[in-house]
Image (cartoon, rainbow, N blue to C red; front, side, top):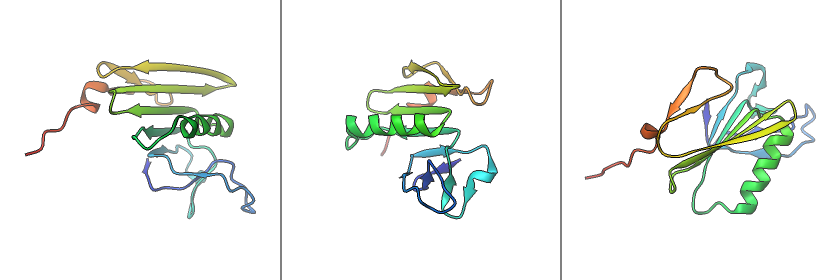
Length: 128
């Protein structure tokens, strides 16, 4: 698991001819061969983006398309303001999605049996 800033070269080429570089908020890579000195070489297994007020719909659509084309297996969009998650699954040219609220469990499909407890994820922090 790699938090931002961490470069991901989605369509990695040895000769560095591809300049498609993104920096997801959280990147999970299961294949150690994809990790290089410059970051991730190729599509990670799971990408998590945390929506902020500065994100635009156009930017989020662009990322969705890039991750799908590159072969990312799972793409999570976490919306802290609305306390929800949209999970996009890209598997064998099949596209599906699931939407979760602020409670219950969200399964991580690439890790069978592993679930995220949403009520713990969206806890409002109290500061004194």
